[in-house]
Length: 249
Length: 225
Image 1: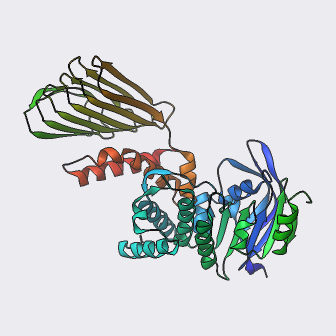
Image 2 (image 1 turned 180 degrees about the vertical axis):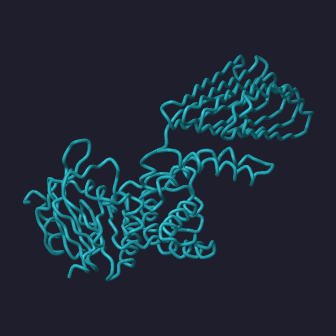
Image 3 (image 1 turned 30 degrees about the horizontal axis):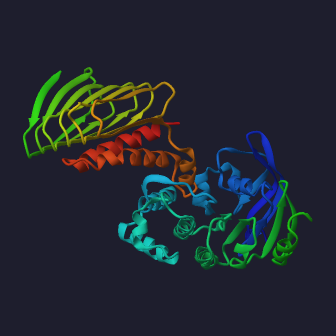
């Protein structure tokens, strides 16, 4: 049923600086599904997540992306966020001088303003912050720190999942979230993602390795290679890739 | 033209705040000299708001041992302002410290000149002197000339200076936008965080000055492409 479709990518070709990286990607994601996109380095995984989140440096040359029935490519990065897309960055960016509290308050109230709502009341906001911080086991002092400045790899990724919990997206895209994480941080991040997943939502887990997929179990697994999806199967594909690598595709 | 010389007496602390706004009637020139006696301290904060064209030659002389001076300032120049700041900090005696921190946002067709000189005279051993000038240059027509200078004649001192001219970080903008912050708000947040180390040094009328700066930055941000 079409109303079950959260994301529909058709014949997507895209690249950066005149170089084509995605060479015709098709992908349909329905409510409740977790999709893993696996692939070797240089396959186009980061390009796909960048195009989905609207990174300005990337150019789409043909194809279409519909998100909840709307033309995603016509939307700015902030409009995509308001519509319910969230990307957890592989390399979260440092924003010196901006506290996590101020950053999140601005983000939440920008969305509320776009929806024609009043800014969130201070008490309500602080309660929400507190709740979501404990969700990813962040100490209260965390809220005063400058966004990602001096954070360890694990803190950066927990901060991503904290922001995801605050924004409560319909589609979460986790771009190489496992890179630079020790096992404890990986568990916290994965259990956060799993707890946020409901039958109304969907997630895309982009990863080179199977490690994260032991904790976030996908319904569908795709292999992306040379800018195309070359294989789609169930979760059993993860073990096959682990054993044989990407050379068979 | 305003001209003045002021002495900070022994063992006292003084704080000076200078907020300059609209000078549409012409460039305002304020010259000042401050002399610090033994164990005195002086904090100067300068805020140059949009619409202000100013010339500010300041001279600070650390004349008594143990004196300390902190000079900081911001300038917001989004139009055709001409701002010329020149600071001479002279260490004459040992065991004094000085710091300078100036930050500016320069856009459209405005022109900023920053001359900062630290002089450490031969007797002024154990001096600590620091100077920083950082600028956000937001248009191709705007100009910033920054010229930090150190003249050191003593051999046991700690001195440093740094000057930068940069633009707003686009990766940070994209990160903020991906969280639903509009491009305009992202830029305003970046500019506000850029000047906040100086704003935190305000002592008098902090709330109203910060509000004027926030308003000015919102206006600058919405005028950028």
